[in-house]
Image (cartoon, rainbow, N blue to C red):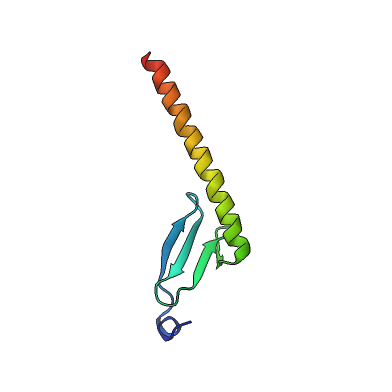
Amino acid sequence: MSLYCTVFGHDFEVSKKVTYHVKEYKCSHCRNQLTTNGNGQLIKLTPKYKEINSILSRIHSKRQAKLRREELQTAYKMTS
C-alpha cells in the first residue's frame, strides 16, 4: 500500500463491469483490487473471485445476447 493510501485512503475506480451488480475496482494509486461478493460487500480480488467473475461475465453476456435476439425476432414478427 502506498503512502498516499495510508494517509488519505484508497481512490477506487471501476475497472470492470462483470454484471449489472458485480463490478471489479482498482485503486488508482496503489493498484489494490477489490470486487463485490454475493452479499454486495467489497472484498479483495483473489484468483478464486477472478474465476468466479469471469464465469459470471460469460453467463451474463450470453443471456443478454439471447434476450436481444428474442426481442429482434418478436419485433420482426410484429412487423410482418
